[in-house]
Image 1 (tube, rainbow, N blue to C red):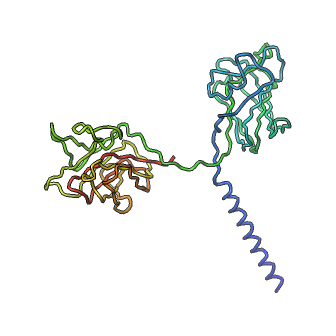
Image 2: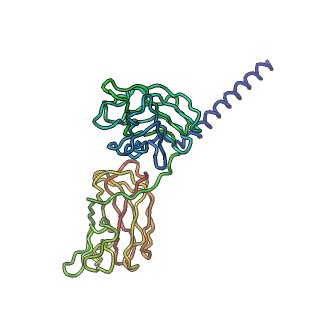
Image 3: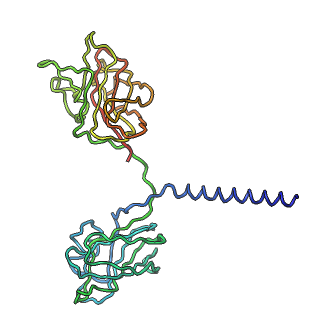
Amino acid sequence: MKNIKIYVIFLLLAGLAISCKKEKRAELTSNLEEVVLDRTGWSATASSQETTNLPGTVLDGNTNTFWSSNATAAFPHWLLIDMKKQTVVTKIGLTTKQGDPKGFTKFRLEGSNDGTSFTAIGELVFNPAMYTEQAFTLSPARNVRYLKLTAIEKAATQTGNITFLAEFSVTGLQERKPLTDIALSKTGWTATASSEVNYLGDETNLAAYVVDVISAKSPTAPTVPSFWQADYDVLHPYPHWIIVDMKKASLLSYIGLNAHTDPKQGFSKFSISGSVDGTTFTQLGDDRNFNPTTVNEQKFAVSPTAPIRYVKITLLEGTSYPCLANFEGYVKL
């Protein structure tokens, strides 16, 4: 009986160890993502080349430029890509010279970490009459610095020995970039409000001014940025609201607000609500405090459960002259 208990305990510990090992592996790989790699700084060399059609053109992002082997050189022809550092490569993309089907039809792909000793990855078939990018998955992925493509078979229509290639792209694993809050473009956005100051020949402080460019000036007070101002007589007490229509739904991470440049004209407490239809609004978090004495943008985190099109700012407390100069919406990219 004692031996059986020991055996059971051993199995439980072994299972725990395996479970922990799996969790650790997931943790180590969770910060990697598969992307088309940035080729800035990479270089390319070749077995031969024409004077104007150099190897480096396969890395320039332009399908109208191409590398061409020397017309007097015989098959096979090779092209060597130096990515400058070891990278886990999962896929390559090849694009042939545009409008010319006389390239190569079969190639050998190899990888290396020193540019001298190469390991075979495989022999692959290429269609020189397809002018869009052709993708080739590496299975398994290879951790290499150099990739060598050797054209070993030419198209049946090719009477000479020349070959060519327009683009060589690489997809691989790299460390996931931190999410960054990016301000959305406000082109086409509109805003409406519970009230706005629009006294012809005197003051014009419309709701629409919160979604114009931050550098825009007030049409009736050109020494200050444009701003929205709610009616401020006794007939218009707090709360005041303004609704921004972003025209399409976005999963916002922050909103940015700018106060009027005059600290005596502003508000000190507000709430944020979101909507998909402009009719039914859900408050996004607790009421917020706002500092009307700073002209710097004040950012407020929001976490809508789904993308929203409309944002409603409700002014709850503040001075006798409630106003807002600017609104920005941010998403994580």
